[in-house]
Each structure stands twice: as structure tokens, then as C-alpha cells.
Length: 289
Length: 271
Image (tube, rainbow over all chains, first blue to last red; front, top):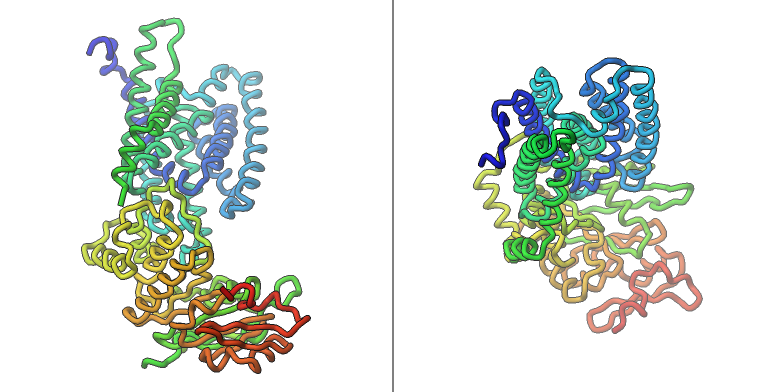
């Protein structure tokens, strides 16, 4: 096993922090991501990552923790999308596109200011592509509390959320407030995006939010199983990504490969694998009446 | 009481962009009865059902549910919408969708009890859907999805089941099966049914009452009371004939009259 675990991997403090934050983030992204895919709101999820970029880079410029910026930006973006009409199918793309455009402009401004007016030359790399190994360990409790809060919200509303995701009209007829449930979900999505931005950067956080859930939804029989499968896949992808990124330092110490690359690559490969005929046949056999 | 009204629709009127869609529509649906809401496409059937569900406010008139005014969403009714697009890529089994009819409005954690799971199985059995209960609901045929949606709507034991054009886009065999199924489950569960359709013939064997809607107005009663030349001529505003052939009803307009809004236009019903 020595060839897989390079020296110091298990005793490294940054690895412990990365594993803790990566695992928690993977779980939240998986649970929220399953509903994001079922609700066909992947584009909204991606747009929120760009909003989080604006928030994170703005926080960097102001000398605040990027986590505060990621979360603040995401929540404000989710609120703006809801006001413009992200809940309505016909105006969903419009609301997402308007917020996405505005956020990208803000992100460009803040990243420019970060690199020219401040001494934070690593801001662009950290905001866009994350740096799990350099996260302050004091961030862990905050991430855990926010993750638990998000999971509790999703857990409490999971039944009405599922029906509104499948058919808003069926849900309305049952007296469910589709608007309220949708807004709560958008806020949970904003938090999930903010947390995954910390882990693998805002640009790549869509991969963790959409990749494992999309794979799990393809290969499981129920939404509950999809959530469990997405959690397992997200955790495995993240921990394996951390291991490979750590090992890559020993492959070539002058150019270690970022952990976010491995997480995104593994997510993508697992999605491709779920479409292989042998996997599809097995799923088909399980679901046959 | 067997014949007490479950639903009273009293003088409902609604306009969109200056166009009067419904004008003074009144009728009752009584406990355990099968009522057909008949009218061609665009006469306001869906609007009327949305008003009854509390999803839309009328400009005038009142809806009463089991004698009480419908102040806001009553949630007292089961509902099968006209169009539900169920994604085959979502791993939701037919039994999962039926179960959501039982508890989708509830917040909180917790698994369903054995009694609830047994009730889901019973509903699936009652609509002849047990053999595809574990299949993804989005991958089922139109007729199979209708059965699942009916079970979803019925499982909370509502006194009235509203169905918006459930027979549209079904082949003739599926139409017969769904109509027979609805008649059977309505009797078994003692639930009243208000079903909208643009063609009445498939419903003739099971309809206790009919609400015939055209040009924003409605006539209601038994089929014999409503589907008559004098009643429908008054409703349409010009003379129409009602012909009965081999157990089927044809509504025929006089030459030159506007016939686009006659649901049973002969060219559509004569085979």
C-alpha cells in the first residue's frame, strides 16, 4: 500500500482538515444535488457558483474569509433569482441568465482588484479552483454547522420538495406552497454551492453538486437510494482526489496537481461509467416489472 | 347522507383580458356520483377546475365544499391534472408517487408506517397497477401513468376526485379501461368524480350527471335532461340537433352555424 499512500499522508494536519471539509461538503452537495438534478435546476446551480465567485472574490478584497463571501453571494444570488422568477419554468433560464451575467461582471471586477490593488496574488487560484490543503482548521466547525443546518432543512421539507420537483401542479393541488418550498431549496442550494466552492473552488463546485447525484440518479431505483449513492460517491471521489493530489507532490514536487482537478475528473469518469451498457443493463434488470 | 352535495358551484364568472371565459356557471356534484364536465377545448373546463381547487379566484360567484365556503385552498379534493410530464430519468417508482399522495404535505423526518405501506399496496391493487408498482413512473405508458395518478389522488380518501381531461391522448382501449376503472373505484371508495372531457360518448355508460359547457355557459343535470335539442340549442344560441345512434350521442349543428365548439361533432364521433 506504500505506493498508494505517500509518507506523512495519515499524519498530515492539512490532509485531516481537507478530508473533514471535503467529506462534509460532499454529503451536502450530494443531497442538495439530487434535488437540483430532479428539478432540472443544474443551470441555476452553476449560476450560483458564479455568484459565489463574486462573493468570494469580494470578501477576499475586503480581507474577509472567502467562506463568508461564498455564502453571502450565494444567498443574495438565490434571492435575486427567486424574485426574477426562477420558480417558473418559463422564466427559469431568464432569471438564471440575468443573475449569472451580473455576477460574472462583479467577479471579474473583484478578481481584478484582488490581483492589482491588494497583495493577495493567489486570490484568483484560490477562489476559482479552491485549495483544500490550505484551509484554516478553524473553518471546520463552521462548515459542519452550516452543513448540518442545510441537511436539516432539506430533511424537514423533503416530501413536499420531492412532489414539487416532480410536478408543481400536483403539489399545488395538495395545498403545498410551491413558492415557499422552492425558495427554501434555493437557499439550501446557495449554501451547498458556497461550501463546495471552499472545497474545490467556485468554478468547479458544479462538478461536485451535479456529478455524483447525476450518476446516482442513473443507477438507483429510488430518490432515497440516489441520495445515499450520491453521498457515497461524492465522499469517495473527494477522498480519492485528496489522496491523489497529495501523492502528486511526490510524482513531481515542482508541479503538484490541484485536488480539485482530481475530484472533477473522478466525478466525470464515474458519470461516464454509469452510462456503460453493462451498467445500464443491470439497472434495467432491477427495474423490470 | 348519500345525495348531499359534496361540491356546489354557484354563479361562477371569470374573464381574461376582457374575454368572458365563464359566465354564471352553476352546478352541484353529489356524494358518490360520477359527473362529466363536457365541453370542447378552450371553453374553460380547466379554468373551472382550477377555481374549484382554489388555485384561481373567480371574478364572481362562490364555491362551497360540503356546505362550507371555499375560503382558500381546501385540499379536500383529489386531483389529476391534464398534463403531468414525468421524467423517466428520475428514479421515482409508481409506488413512491402514490405514497406522496398520502404525506407530501407533511414536514419532518420519519419513515412510513406499515399501515401506510399497506394502504399504498391496496391503492395500487385497486387501480390494477401492482405489476408495475416498482417501475420508474416516467417510463410507464400514458394509460399506466393515469392509473398511478388516480391512485395518488385517491389515497388520501377525498370526498371528490377531479380529473382534467384524463382520457386525452389515450387509445380507445385505454379510454374504456380508465373509464371502467374510475367507475369501479368511485363505487368502492364512495368518492364523487368530476371528470372533464371534450367527448361524452365514452362516459355515457357511467355518468350520473353531466355539466355541459360551451361559450362560457353551462347546463347541468342527468344526461337525459341536458343532452336534448332544446336545452343545447338555448346554450349554443342557435339550433342544434341531438341524435342517438347505437348508444352514442351526436350533437349536430344546423347548416352554416358555427360548429367548432361542439364536442361531439359528427366527423369526430361517427365510426
